[in-house]
Length: 226
Image 1 (cartoon, helix red, strand yellow):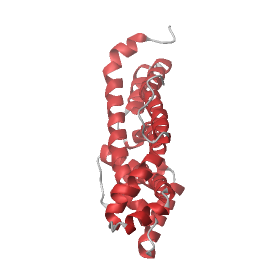
Image 2 (tube, one colour):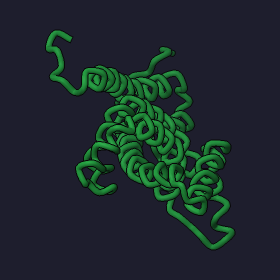
Image 3 (cartoon, one colour):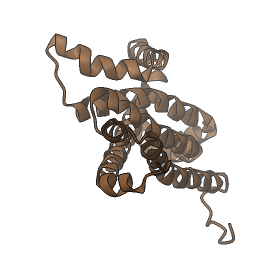
Image 4 (cartoon, helix red, strand yellow):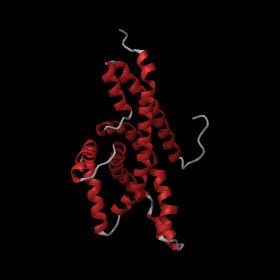
């Protein structure tokens, strides 16, 4: 028997690709939701008002101190006992978003705090409101600073979607498990699974490296020789 069985790829190729599509879908949806929700969460943690800051602090610290796998299990398997039942994909999106919004809020917070105070003072001297100052002056600078870190979270999220299999979402990893359980071709199945993860994760890593160079050069035009 050959170690790598190409007939498995021919027979289950569509299943692998469907799993990859689900993984990519989860990644895109969660990174967009978490990226947006993390902004007000970061601002809440920077608020001088305690009743705004303390709940945000507790949320972030609690999520960071508990494993993602437990959060997913709790949302999908524990909440039904309280009458809250969610579809597998919905549970996976909520669990991953809750987790990543907490971590990404810290990235945003560090980026916002890295903007020099002179930027705020200059905006105030020109009579620009605080909201406009943040949207048009502070946040663009902070976002450019933290963009490489956000890119790394994107790569991590793409891999962490494998945990969605715990809530019965048939993403790429779960698809591989199902196929391997049918034909016992573990080497072939998990080699193909690894290759599919790599085929998306590696280009994403290269993109993050390019974003890092762009951010360091202030978004100047990239060198064509690079």
